[in-house]
Length: 295
Image 1 (tube, one colour):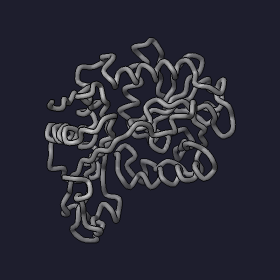
Image 2 (cartoon, rainbow, N blue to C red):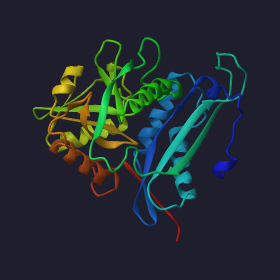
Image 3 (cartoon, one colour):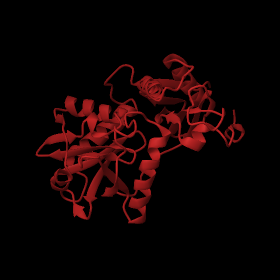
Image 4 (cartoon, rainbow, N blue to C red):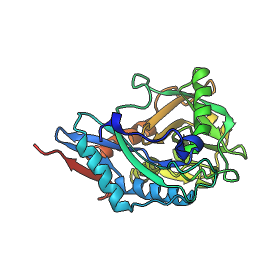
């Protein structure tokens, strides 16, 4: 349906309590009459896993959701790249915090999208947030749940207010976790380091893509607990995420990272990632779902 006709009740449980799960998917213009959805199935599988973790009854299976994403892309013929937002939320059923018998609604929307961060910037200025990442003792950081993103919004607003482009969370033990909407990678002495899943991160699909690309390019990627000091001393630092892509960080808490410019490792991974999502390189047969518009 047209965007302006899509609606839900103001008393929707997901709106009032954050009881929702969602995904962010990119569809790239690979030809004038074609869009390519990147890792559609992987996103839909995570979407269903997130709902399962929250005990939300998802009525659709992976194949149905994949097809629905394709139909949304087909219904939007605008030029350029798209950002696609599937969301499943607990619908209107009452105000009880026990939502297990309330309906679960699913919607998928798309909007034109080119860059999450200011494309004129050659590198990002980031800070360590004063807010800690939501912990596994108090929530489900592995679920891409709407309620988790209040935590991210607080950190993002704090960073913006203080003149930074992005924030990096520490977990409850003081180890590096992730950005407000991205995973974190550090390059030190030729090795690429990234926090493991138990550091309260979201298990990012772009994170997995970047790790696969880096490994094929001959870099060593190691998951390990990372301290704030290790970020300060690293040679290169970058974010990865569906919206952000691969984004270099050139300053952290007022400390220059490396040379203060995008490093060679980050650049090589960013360029290869951009080639992969646009179908110029092939890593896995099922990573791209091509949608062609009728003449």
